[in-house]
Image (tube, rainbow, N blue to C red; front, side):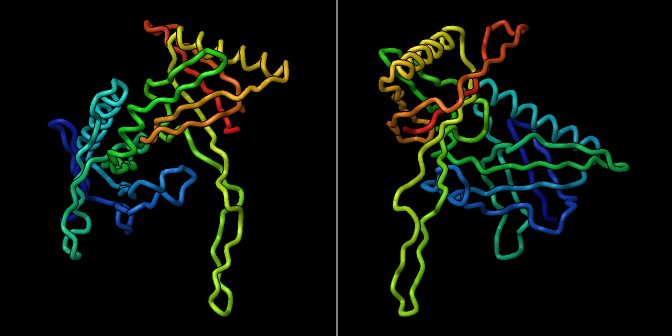
Length: 264
């Protein structure tokens, strides 16, 4: 019997009543995405569309809630996934660590619960950097290091390439390279939790930045980014000023800040 088993700690659930003919597991090459992660190995991605009895659906949801609790607390939240959907086709069952790419969805369908979920293989090179990396901003003697867990699953840094370089071949076989020989500029789209002190530090940088722009001085902010492993040093300008939201019921007085910078 083909199945996919997902477990965390001592809890596990096995899915085998799939509702689609396609294999759930695909091998995704991240170099085709807008994220600058082509230097890292591709990852397995599992898309689950299946029917589960109510009791198994409750187990599946419990595993997700445990994953979410550990993820939020900064603890080891890796899931152990065993994929035996291709067993027997010259490929044995595959076991690897994974994360939930997005929250699972549940729909009542007769005596069963139809679930839809996406899991992405855990990659130590990128995911550990995502959890432990930081973005440090400094300007005019002021600095701020955002090293807490970022609130979005994607990396804060990416770049936009309007025209991608291409290699073409002439009739006689000569290589013709078209497009710009340079990459696009980096964009940092940051959504993070800040303490009151960190918010004050960010506002201080912005005040000095605005004063430099008004006085026609150099407004470039120094950026040190280690969210993708190796440290990247760059200079940037504010492309979207911070917006804050505050949960009054929170005892920790944490602010959610969202803002963007573009490489100068």
